[in-house]
Length: 114
Length: 115
Image (cartoon, rainbow over all chains, first blue to last red; front, side):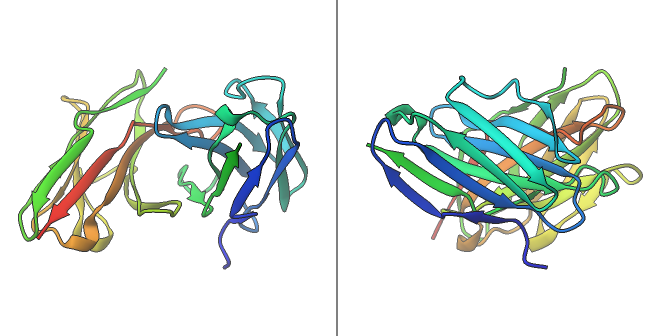
C-alpha cells in the first residue's frame, strides 16, 4: 500500500495567488481529514469528510479556504487568495470506520506564501 | 468535548536514559487513546494505541504507554532512549461513542535525546 499521497510536497507562492493542495487517501478508507500545522497553533483540524461528504468544516479559518472530495480517491484543499499567514504544513490523513479511529497521515505539503 | 493536555512542551534526556512523556485527557465517555510520533519534515505515524483490555500497551520502537482511567492519563515511556528517538510526540483521544473517527490532538512534546 502506497499510503496517503499528497502533492505537491512544497509550494511557494506569492500573496494573492490561488493555491491547490491535493490528497489521495488509502484505498478503502472512508474518512479523510485535512490538518494544518504551525509553530504557533500546533496541529489544527480544518475539515473532514465521510464517504466524500463534508462532515465538519468548523476548523476552516475563513472563506478563502475551501475543500472538496469529488470521489473516494481524491480531495483538494484550495486557498484563494493566499496570504502570508497561511504559510504552514498541511497534512491529509485517512481512516476507516472499522479501524478503531486510527488515522494514517500523508507526508504533508509545506506551503510558503511570500 | 474531549481535550488533551501534554504537560511538557520539551523533554531533554541523555541517550540510554529512561523517559516519560505525560498526557492527560478529559472526556465524558470512554475513549480510544493514541500516541503518534513526528520526525523532522515528516508526517505523523502511529506509535501505539489503547482501545480496550490491558492497560499497558506496547508499541513500536520499544515504547509503551499505560492507560490510567482514574487519573485520566496515558503516559508514554521508554526504558532506554536512542538519538534516533529525537522527534515530536503527540497524544490524541477519540470518542468511541461518537460519530466521525475524529481525533483531538495535544500540543505535542519535543523529545531531545543528547549524547
